[in-house]
Length: 97
Ligand code: FES
Image 1 (cartoon, helix red, strand yellow):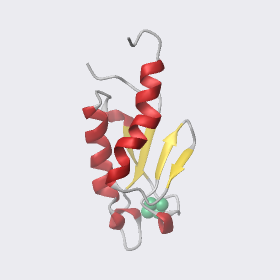
Image 2 (cartoon, rainbow, N blue to C red):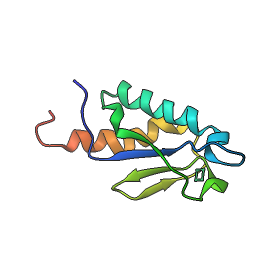
Image 3 (tube, rainbow, N blue to C red):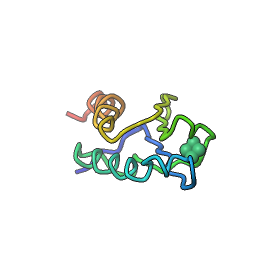
């Protein structure tokens, strides 16, 4: 059974020259979805974000509600971000085993 997480990961994949989509945001979005499912967390945890005008540092990823922003995120960063923000919280949830 997939675990629902209280935290959400917002990945900017907005298309357009110089925007996060042109810097791998789409691949990153899919990589986050794959990683959360691999860790038995619902893929509804990962959402596509609209442009927040930070694409000079893109692709950007926001973690809600922790209010953490990651910039220049690469696919090799995905596992660590998921473990830091989602796996730890899921493990701390009462009754989650
Ligand atoms: S396109 Fe991602 S912040 Fe603007």
